[in-house]
Image (cartoon, rainbow, N blue to C red):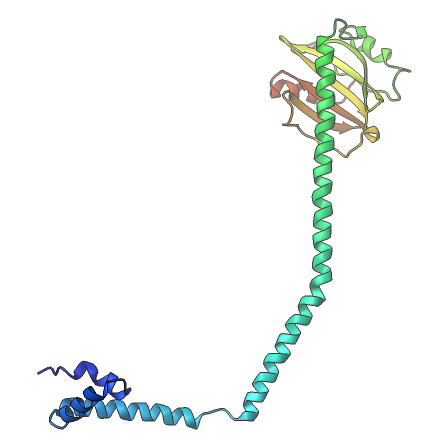
Length: 248
C-alpha cells in the first residue's frame, strides 16, 4: 500500500517540515517500516556526500595557485587587447579611407557621366549638331587634326546598321576631345573620346546605370571612350565593339 507520508520523506530529511509535522512523522516511522527504511537510506546518502565533499576539499595552497593563474590569464587578455588595439585602429582607419575613396570615386564617375549625358543631349537639341558633316570616316577624322592633342581611328560602318553623321569638338573639364555622332534606325548615339590621363578619376571599363541612357566606356591606346545614347544596350555594345576592333 502507498503511504501518505512517502512524498514528504525528502522534505523531512532536509529538515524543512514544520515542528508539528516533524513530530507526526517521527511517530509514523515507528510503525511504518517502508518510510523508516526510505528515510534512513536518504539520510545515509546525504552523509556520504557531505563526507566526500570534506575529504576532497582543496587546500589553501591549491586555491592560491588557481587564483594566481586566473589573475595571470586576466592580465594576459588585457595586455593582448591593448597590444592589438593599434593594429585594429590602423585597420579601421584604412577601412575608412577606402570607403571614402570609393565614395569619392563613385561621385566623380557619376559627375562625369552626368556631364557627358548633358553634352549628348545638348548636341541633339542643337540646330547644328555637328561641326563636320560627313558619313565618310576619311573626311571626319582629318577634320580633328590640329584641334585636339591626340589622334584616333574610326571604324568602317558601311556594311552595318550604323551610319556616321559627323563630328564636333567636345570639352570635358575644359579638356578638348572628339564627339562622333552615329545613327541607327531612329536613334542617335554619341561617341566621346578624351585622353585617359586628363580625366579626374580612374575608370573601370563597363556601363553606368546611374544615367537615363545606355552607356559603354573603355580604355584603348591611352584614350578613354564613352558611348552613350537612347538606343538599346545591344546597339551600344555593338558600336563599341566596332571601335575596339583593329581598323584598317
